[in-house]
Amino acid sequence: MKKSKAEANETIRRLIEVARAHFTEHGYADAALETIVAEAQLTRGALYHHFGNKKGLFRIVLESVQQEVAARVEEGASKGEDLWEQLYLGCRAFVTAAVEPANKRIMLIDGPSVLGWSAWREMDANNSMRLLRGQLQMMKQQGYLSPVSIDAMTHFLSGALNEITLWNAQQLDHQQAMDETMKVMSLFLDGFKRRAAEE
Image (cartoon, rainbow, N blue to C red; front, top):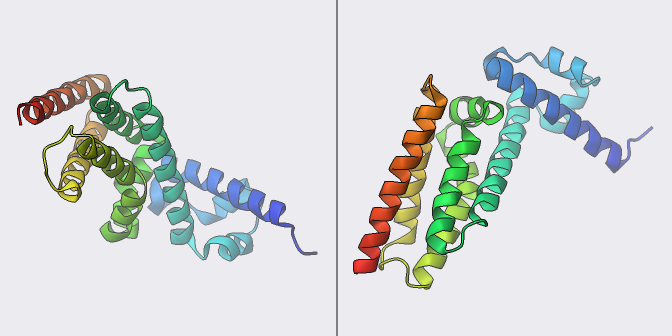
């Protein structure tokens, strides 16, 4: 009997949910497909049908993590009262979300190594970087930024955010690392704000 679209979607959702938990806890290399499909109460055939293989499953899990982090960035930025505060809060939300245990290993550690930097950067460009570019473009249009290349600035800030997030993920005292990160981020953006105002 052919499964309905709703049943197929539920199968996919359940596999992603279980796989995400296993990739988070064990990492990509040590996450066993047999264990994932058994816990999801599905067959390897169902996994292969929907995702092709383990790497295909991981790609979809990573995409879902990227999308969740982007949603957190958008939500954080929306709380700002002006465009500069929105930029700061969006950057803060990115770092905070990316270093959470449910996201960190999949997004920062295994993502680039399993899929390669090109695929990882493409996903980043479609999610958090897309929001960053949109915010900077809006700031430029409204005269908050001097006439600089938005593409260059987007990659500059995105690279800094990715690097500081990786640094945070490696620190033993996470709270101290986060406090230091936010202080540096605030100092950097405040300095840039003053420079823009002077110009």
